[in-house]
Image (cartoon, rainbow, N blue to C red; front, side, top):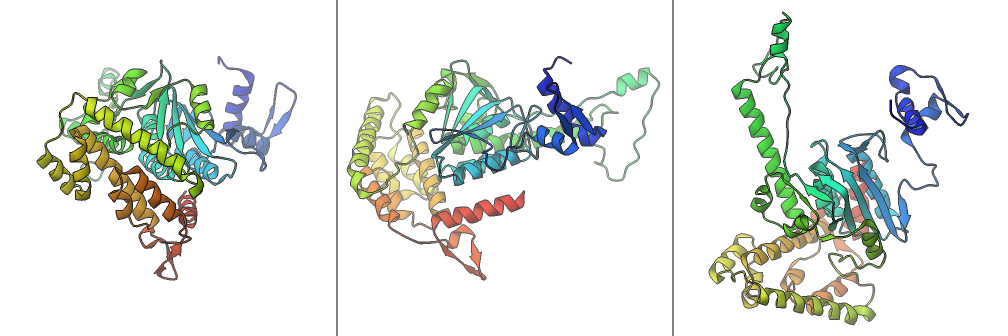
Length: 424
């Protein structure tokens, strides 16, 4: 092997149960029994330690190597990261009072489909609790991109690569080699499709077509989630044909938010300048500042729209699009602003996200949606909601004594976290 001693110790320790290694003498003279080897392989910290690092309020959660559904470990090990461990880390970070935001440090070419979209959907919901950002440390492709795209913001360096929104299945046939050696395998089975895709026979056309149909469906599901996370249309994601994009090209097509180094992203997050999805208002005293910032952003948006070379969306088509999405109240403002078709699509996506979050939290959505284009009234609505001690959680799925419970937002998320932990 071409491997350093510490890494070799980790590999041997991970194999203790499989091959029956009873003890390990390390290069530093320390002798580990089987329990010690398991602890070494898991790289499990003591109870007083966190399984992630914190840098001035930013929890850094690694997502590296091959991604698998269940690794049974909080940390990456033996070149793999488990979706189960990542989810557990994120819940712990969101509960940690010393953590203000989370940075997913991604360096992975992907992995298993199983469990991937469940985790990415959960991250998409989690980011309403605390900002969750992602950094593609040179590579966040396929399953790793699904995870990264679900974060509040996704950054990459100049040489970083993201994308590969596609699915692959490999079939290996050894039928020809077996014929040359005079070997014949007979598969005795019950059920016409029981041995579909076996390696002892060349792939029949009908089986190949069935596999193709399955992965086409999986690819569309993948693209639909990326479209929601990134505020893009499904067709624009599918049209990338599973290509990967590097640096500024990834930003240009909408797969990333900006080209930055890891330290630049970290410094911006420390200063809380990474562009959180909504301003955090702690009291009415600083509302004026937030409103000024929101107004500045709105003016900049309107100026960008006015200078855009894209044609304004036809008013009739715009109204039809709003009606189809059940957001007819948004049409007048967008018509007055001269929104393009792409801008209308992004606004409707934002509106749907807001509606989903409001339903999950039991908050009436009308007041927020009605002021989506009016930052002053929007901020006033947010301040008013802060003063509500309790919310109706009828739509949150929380049942106590056979009746929908009335709980605070924090209590709802605590319940969801507990349910997620029990599921794993």
